Image (cartoon, one colour):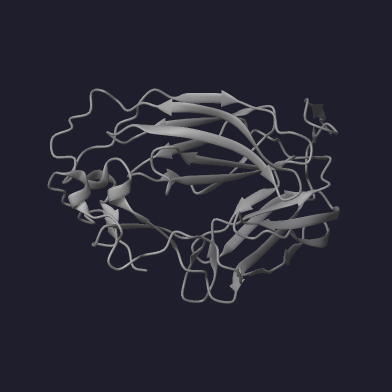
Length: 294
Protein backbone atom coordinates (compact mmCIF):
# COMPACT_ATOMS: atom_id res chain seq x y z
CA UNK A 1 0.00 0.00 0.00
CA UNK A 2 1.31 3.42 -0.97
CA UNK A 3 0.26 6.32 1.24
CA UNK A 4 1.02 9.97 0.49
CA UNK A 5 -0.21 12.94 2.51
CA UNK A 6 -0.49 16.55 1.52
CA UNK A 7 -1.56 19.65 3.42
CA UNK A 8 -5.23 20.46 3.69
CA UNK A 9 -7.47 22.52 5.93
CA UNK A 10 -8.13 20.46 9.04
CA UNK A 11 -7.08 16.80 9.03
CA UNK A 12 -4.77 15.89 6.15
CA UNK A 13 -6.27 13.71 3.45
CA UNK A 14 -4.03 10.77 2.55
CA UNK A 15 -3.65 9.08 -0.82
CA UNK A 16 -3.61 5.29 -0.82
CA UNK A 17 -4.26 2.42 -3.21
CA UNK A 18 -7.95 1.50 -3.22
CA UNK A 19 -8.20 -2.12 -4.36
CA UNK A 20 -11.59 -3.08 -2.93
CA UNK A 21 -13.55 0.11 -3.35
CA UNK A 22 -17.29 0.47 -3.63
CA UNK A 23 -19.48 2.65 -5.83
CA UNK A 24 -22.45 4.90 -5.06
CA UNK A 25 -24.97 5.77 -7.77
CA UNK A 26 -28.16 7.72 -7.50
CA UNK A 27 -30.55 10.35 -8.77
CA UNK A 28 -31.45 13.79 -7.43
CA UNK A 29 -34.96 15.14 -7.92
CA UNK A 30 -36.74 18.33 -6.92
CA UNK A 31 -39.68 17.89 -4.57
CA UNK A 32 -42.30 20.37 -5.70
CA UNK A 33 -42.42 22.84 -8.60
CA UNK A 34 -39.30 24.89 -9.35
CA UNK A 35 -39.55 28.55 -8.33
CA UNK A 36 -40.07 31.20 -11.02
CA UNK A 37 -36.83 32.44 -12.57
CA UNK A 38 -35.27 35.77 -11.72
CA UNK A 39 -35.92 38.25 -14.52
CA UNK A 40 -33.62 41.13 -15.48
CA UNK A 41 -34.56 43.99 -17.81
CA UNK A 42 -31.58 44.04 -20.17
CA UNK A 43 -32.01 47.74 -20.91
CA UNK A 44 -30.91 48.49 -17.33
CA UNK A 45 -27.56 46.67 -17.72
CA UNK A 46 -24.56 47.20 -20.01
CA UNK A 47 -24.34 45.43 -23.38
CA UNK A 48 -28.07 44.70 -23.84
CA UNK A 49 -27.70 43.71 -27.50
CA UNK A 50 -24.90 41.23 -26.95
CA UNK A 51 -26.16 39.76 -23.68
CA UNK A 52 -29.67 39.72 -25.15
CA UNK A 53 -28.57 36.92 -27.47
CA UNK A 54 -29.89 34.79 -24.59
CA UNK A 55 -33.22 36.33 -23.62
CA UNK A 56 -36.99 36.03 -23.78
CA UNK A 57 -37.36 37.92 -27.05
CA UNK A 58 -38.95 40.95 -25.39
CA UNK A 59 -35.95 42.34 -23.52
CA UNK A 60 -35.70 40.15 -20.41
CA UNK A 61 -32.87 37.87 -19.32
CA UNK A 62 -33.84 34.96 -17.04
CA UNK A 63 -31.77 33.23 -14.36
CA UNK A 64 -33.24 29.97 -13.10
CA UNK A 65 -32.51 28.58 -9.66
CA UNK A 66 -32.71 24.98 -10.87
CA UNK A 67 -32.04 23.18 -14.14
CA UNK A 68 -34.74 20.50 -14.07
CA UNK A 69 -36.29 18.23 -16.69
CA UNK A 70 -39.93 17.17 -17.05
CA UNK A 71 -39.42 14.46 -14.40
CA UNK A 72 -38.07 17.03 -11.91
CA UNK A 73 -34.58 15.52 -12.07
CA UNK A 74 -32.01 18.19 -11.23
CA UNK A 75 -28.79 18.99 -13.08
CA UNK A 76 -25.69 20.61 -11.51
CA UNK A 77 -26.15 19.26 -7.99
CA UNK A 78 -22.88 18.43 -6.21
CA UNK A 79 -23.01 15.12 -4.33
CA UNK A 80 -20.02 14.49 -2.06
CA UNK A 81 -18.78 12.42 0.86
CA UNK A 82 -17.69 13.62 4.29
CA UNK A 83 -15.35 11.84 6.71
CA UNK A 84 -13.06 10.22 4.10
CA UNK A 85 -9.54 10.42 5.53
CA UNK A 86 -7.74 8.38 2.85
CA UNK A 87 -8.42 7.10 -0.65
CA UNK A 88 -7.78 7.76 -4.34
CA UNK A 89 -5.66 10.74 -5.50
CA UNK A 90 -7.12 14.19 -4.92
CA UNK A 91 -5.93 16.13 -7.95
CA UNK A 92 -8.40 19.04 -7.88
CA UNK A 93 -6.51 22.30 -7.61
CA UNK A 94 -7.84 25.28 -9.57
CA UNK A 95 -11.22 24.93 -11.30
CA UNK A 96 -11.90 27.04 -14.38
CA UNK A 97 -14.99 29.18 -14.86
CA UNK A 98 -15.72 30.84 -18.21
CA UNK A 99 -17.74 33.95 -18.96
CA UNK A 100 -19.50 32.94 -22.17
CA UNK A 101 -22.55 34.63 -23.72
CA UNK A 102 -22.93 36.67 -20.53
CA UNK A 103 -23.19 33.67 -18.24
CA UNK A 104 -20.66 32.08 -15.91
CA UNK A 105 -20.12 28.42 -16.79
CA UNK A 106 -20.36 26.05 -15.07
CA UNK A 107 -23.14 27.24 -12.79
CA UNK A 108 -21.86 24.98 -9.99
CA UNK A 109 -18.40 23.61 -9.31
CA UNK A 110 -16.17 22.62 -6.39
CA UNK A 111 -13.20 24.40 -4.82
CA UNK A 112 -10.50 23.67 -2.27
CA UNK A 113 -9.81 26.19 0.45
CA UNK A 114 -6.27 27.53 0.22
CA UNK A 115 -6.08 26.87 -3.50
CA UNK A 116 -7.88 29.12 -5.96
CA UNK A 117 -10.01 29.58 -9.04
CA UNK A 118 -9.40 30.62 -12.65
CA UNK A 119 -11.87 32.86 -14.49
CA UNK A 120 -11.62 33.54 -18.23
CA UNK A 121 -13.67 35.97 -20.31
CA UNK A 122 -14.66 34.40 -23.64
CA UNK A 123 -16.96 37.29 -24.57
CA UNK A 124 -16.12 40.45 -26.54
CA UNK A 125 -17.51 42.61 -23.71
CA UNK A 126 -16.13 43.54 -20.31
CA UNK A 127 -17.11 41.65 -17.15
CA UNK A 128 -16.31 42.27 -13.48
CA UNK A 129 -15.78 39.43 -11.00
CA UNK A 130 -17.13 39.89 -7.48
CA UNK A 131 -16.35 36.83 -5.35
CA UNK A 132 -17.66 36.02 -1.89
CA UNK A 133 -17.65 33.28 0.71
CA UNK A 134 -20.92 32.72 2.50
CA UNK A 135 -22.83 30.62 5.01
CA UNK A 136 -26.30 30.80 6.52
CA UNK A 137 -24.97 31.30 10.05
CA UNK A 138 -21.97 33.55 9.46
CA UNK A 139 -23.15 35.59 6.49
CA UNK A 140 -21.11 36.80 3.52
CA UNK A 141 -17.54 38.06 3.23
CA UNK A 142 -15.82 39.54 0.16
CA UNK A 143 -12.91 37.45 -1.14
CA UNK A 144 -11.87 39.51 -4.16
CA UNK A 145 -13.17 41.91 -6.79
CA UNK A 146 -11.44 42.25 -10.15
CA UNK A 147 -12.21 43.34 -13.72
CA UNK A 148 -12.29 40.56 -16.30
CA UNK A 149 -10.99 42.02 -19.58
CA UNK A 150 -11.88 40.60 -22.95
CA UNK A 151 -9.54 39.53 -25.72
CA UNK A 152 -8.71 42.72 -27.61
CA UNK A 153 -8.13 40.75 -30.80
CA UNK A 154 -11.81 39.88 -30.98
CA UNK A 155 -13.21 40.54 -34.43
CA UNK A 156 -16.06 42.48 -32.96
CA UNK A 157 -18.04 43.24 -36.12
CA UNK A 158 -21.76 42.97 -35.45
CA UNK A 159 -21.73 41.70 -31.85
CA UNK A 160 -25.49 41.50 -31.96
CA UNK A 161 -25.39 38.91 -34.73
CA UNK A 162 -22.40 36.64 -34.31
CA UNK A 163 -18.81 36.30 -33.16
CA UNK A 164 -16.24 33.66 -32.29
CA UNK A 165 -15.46 33.22 -28.60
CA UNK A 166 -11.84 33.92 -27.72
CA UNK A 167 -10.21 33.89 -24.27
CA UNK A 168 -8.97 37.03 -22.60
CA UNK A 169 -6.20 36.98 -20.01
CA UNK A 170 -6.85 34.44 -17.26
CA UNK A 171 -7.74 35.78 -13.84
CA UNK A 172 -6.36 33.41 -11.18
CA UNK A 173 -7.04 34.16 -7.53
CA UNK A 174 -6.00 32.14 -4.51
CA UNK A 175 -8.25 32.33 -1.47
CA UNK A 176 -8.77 30.72 1.91
CA UNK A 177 -12.27 30.20 3.22
CA UNK A 178 -13.03 31.22 6.79
CA UNK A 179 -13.90 28.58 9.36
CA UNK A 180 -17.55 27.64 9.00
CA UNK A 181 -17.90 29.06 5.49
CA UNK A 182 -17.97 26.41 2.77
CA UNK A 183 -19.81 28.17 -0.07
CA UNK A 184 -18.12 30.29 -2.76
CA UNK A 185 -20.10 32.51 -5.14
CA UNK A 186 -19.18 34.78 -8.03
CA UNK A 187 -21.32 37.45 -9.64
CA UNK A 188 -20.60 39.91 -12.42
CA UNK A 189 -20.62 43.49 -11.20
CA UNK A 190 -21.87 44.67 -14.60
CA UNK A 191 -24.38 41.91 -15.39
CA UNK A 192 -26.19 40.78 -12.24
CA UNK A 193 -27.69 37.73 -13.96
CA UNK A 194 -24.24 36.13 -14.21
CA UNK A 195 -23.64 33.80 -11.23
CA UNK A 196 -21.46 30.79 -10.47
CA UNK A 197 -21.45 28.83 -7.21
CA UNK A 198 -19.07 26.36 -5.59
CA UNK A 199 -18.88 24.19 -2.50
CA UNK A 200 -15.58 23.46 -0.76
CA UNK A 201 -14.70 19.76 -0.71
CA UNK A 202 -12.14 17.95 1.42
CA UNK A 203 -11.59 14.81 -0.66
CA UNK A 204 -11.99 13.59 -4.27
CA UNK A 205 -15.25 11.74 -3.63
CA UNK A 206 -17.72 14.06 -5.30
CA UNK A 207 -19.80 14.11 -8.48
CA UNK A 208 -22.06 16.44 -10.45
CA UNK A 209 -25.52 15.38 -11.54
CA UNK A 210 -26.22 15.23 -15.27
CA UNK A 211 -29.35 16.31 -17.16
CA UNK A 212 -31.15 13.23 -15.81
CA UNK A 213 -30.17 14.03 -12.23
CA UNK A 214 -27.80 11.05 -12.10
CA UNK A 215 -24.45 10.82 -10.32
CA UNK A 216 -21.72 8.19 -9.80
CA UNK A 217 -18.96 8.16 -7.16
CA UNK A 218 -16.41 5.36 -7.58
CA UNK A 219 -13.41 3.75 -5.84
CA UNK A 220 -14.67 4.54 -2.33
CA UNK A 221 -12.77 2.81 0.49
CA UNK A 222 -15.10 0.58 2.54
CA UNK A 223 -16.44 2.39 5.59
CA UNK A 224 -19.22 4.53 7.02
CA UNK A 225 -19.57 8.07 5.68
CA UNK A 226 -21.95 10.98 5.40
CA UNK A 227 -23.08 11.79 1.87
CA UNK A 228 -24.49 15.21 1.00
CA UNK A 229 -26.39 16.63 -1.97
CA UNK A 230 -25.66 20.36 -2.35
CA UNK A 231 -27.31 23.00 -4.50
CA UNK A 232 -26.99 26.75 -3.87
CA UNK A 233 -30.76 27.30 -3.98
CA UNK A 234 -31.41 24.75 -1.20
CA UNK A 235 -30.60 26.34 2.14
CA UNK A 236 -30.75 23.24 4.32
CA UNK A 237 -28.08 20.53 4.29
CA UNK A 238 -29.36 17.31 2.70
CA UNK A 239 -27.19 14.64 4.34
CA UNK A 240 -27.52 10.86 4.69
CA UNK A 241 -25.37 8.14 6.24
CA UNK A 242 -24.01 5.44 3.97
CA UNK A 243 -22.10 2.21 4.63
CA UNK A 244 -19.83 1.36 1.69
CA UNK A 245 -18.94 -2.32 1.29
CA UNK A 246 -16.09 -3.77 -0.80
CA UNK A 247 -16.77 -4.24 -4.52
CA UNK A 248 -20.40 -3.22 -4.08
CA UNK A 249 -22.57 -0.81 -6.06
CA UNK A 250 -25.24 0.81 -3.95
CA UNK A 251 -27.97 3.28 -4.84
CA UNK A 252 -28.87 6.42 -2.89
CA UNK A 253 -31.40 8.94 -4.16
CA UNK A 254 -32.01 12.47 -2.93
CA UNK A 255 -35.05 14.72 -2.97
CA UNK A 256 -34.35 18.44 -2.74
CA UNK A 257 -37.12 20.60 -1.27
CA UNK A 258 -38.25 23.32 -3.66
CA UNK A 259 -38.16 26.76 -2.01
CA UNK A 260 -41.62 27.86 -0.90
CA UNK A 261 -40.86 31.51 -0.18
CA UNK A 262 -40.49 34.16 -2.83
CA UNK A 263 -36.88 33.96 -4.00
CA UNK A 264 -36.38 37.31 -5.73
CA UNK A 265 -37.69 40.79 -6.39
CA UNK A 266 -36.51 40.48 -10.00
CA UNK A 267 -39.69 39.65 -11.89
CA UNK A 268 -41.01 40.42 -15.36
CA UNK A 269 -43.07 43.61 -15.46
CA UNK A 270 -45.47 44.39 -18.29
CA UNK A 271 -44.94 47.05 -19.42
CA UNK A 272 -41.36 47.39 -18.13
CA UNK A 273 -40.45 50.42 -16.06
CA UNK A 274 -37.58 51.22 -18.45
CA UNK A 275 -37.59 50.76 -22.21
CA UNK A 276 -35.07 51.29 -25.01
CA UNK A 277 -36.10 54.95 -25.12
CA UNK A 278 -34.21 55.43 -21.85
CA UNK A 279 -30.92 54.83 -23.70
CA UNK A 280 -31.60 57.50 -26.28
CA UNK A 281 -30.56 55.26 -29.16
CA UNK A 282 -32.03 52.37 -31.15
CA UNK A 283 -31.57 48.99 -29.45
CA UNK A 284 -32.27 45.60 -31.00
CA UNK A 285 -32.42 42.67 -28.58
CA UNK A 286 -32.87 39.28 -30.22
CA UNK A 287 -32.39 35.79 -28.68
CA UNK A 288 -30.03 34.54 -31.38
CA UNK A 289 -28.34 31.98 -29.09
CA UNK A 290 -31.26 30.91 -26.88
CA UNK A 291 -34.86 32.01 -26.53
CA UNK A 292 -35.82 31.75 -22.87
CA UNK A 293 -39.32 31.01 -21.66
CA UNK A 294 -40.65 32.23 -18.28
